[in-house]
Image (cartoon, rainbow, N blue to C red; front, side, top):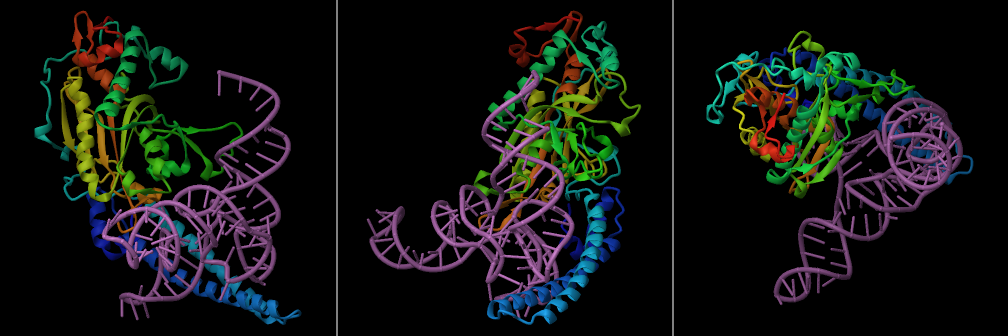
Length: 433
RNA sequence: GGAGGGGUGGCUGAGUGGUUGAAAGCACCGGUCUUGAAAACCGGCAACGGGGCAACUCGUUCGGGGGUUCGAAUCCCUCCCCCUCCGCCA
């Protein structure tokens, strides 16, 4: 959610920054709505003040007299009440229009974000490139001979539908090991607190982290038996990422500054409808309706979010380094960033089967964008309540890490188990397929 | 699913129609005292929004929404959430 005061003060700047993301905002309409809302409010408040004073007078009269003559006053209030009712209706309508616009506008890009319409404007952070890539094409993960023994899309299609998979034996264990390893690393080495969060969340949470209202079609909704689905405010959703359940921990709360930063990590299943991705990555495990992901969330003071962002990026990187998977880091351009982000780094892992880098983690600083939607605040040193900053990052996507291992660790005998995972795999050193 | 109880400021917790935005306590901030600290005492301390250069002022908010009333934290309806007991179930 955007600070309407800032828009009011600098509408052109706001419009320009939105334009960097390819969004054309009708700021004039926003300003008009805002102005008329405020005018209406002033009017309303004067009437309310009048009503309150008259009511108090009636109360005083009744306290003095046994049979007071207050009919005149009551009649006056009746007239005012009608006017108030009218105005309230108007204001609520105006406000609804305004909110609909504001809730649908993405966060403003930070100044150091490259301007561009899409991913071709992303910038690689050269210094962060890691590992030696294998430029000899290997089998893609789903092409590995007999892999369907352990990675079964057919049965999943029968039981669930497209974009689901059964993992078996060594691959199921590998997925579990990866999740375990990542969690342990972030808990022990990176100072995150492990959370086992709900996978189903309510409307307010989804609005808070901005999956709603704009991206409803990407979500799975949970229909409870006898649920009244016309009650829009009371719907339930499967989380598309643990970011939702982790970040909303601080929703509608005032946190003590001494408790910041908060650092949460969770390993959860994630659910995405992939409505807009028909035909993309239809083979293999790259794009599934359900996948495992380790998610990092940090909550900080505004002054510290940038340094926390870098820190979080390093936490995510450390996972790929320890797994010895080659990757590069991209600074996303304004047109490629997610809705809530003001600055995002993507980690892209090398997939020798595709001979290309694929996104395996996205690390974003959301500034106060989500905090405003969530009313997530803290008390600063002057005891003022301020919005905090929220950050989130994958650390990392487990499903994609599994694919990366399948493609980078292929040997004639099977899939070699990365050194750091062996202890999570009962000392198994090769997964025979 | 059945029966009952409850949701009040950062926290605990009073308050059942009329200056109650809300007692009291804790926490926090300032001061007095003290060599310093603690204790004690005195004072301050909600959020959000409108108007104003400002001092300030006005409005809204006691789980959410709706209603009754001149006036609602207090009465009514509805939804959500929490607790206790019974039933069912992983």
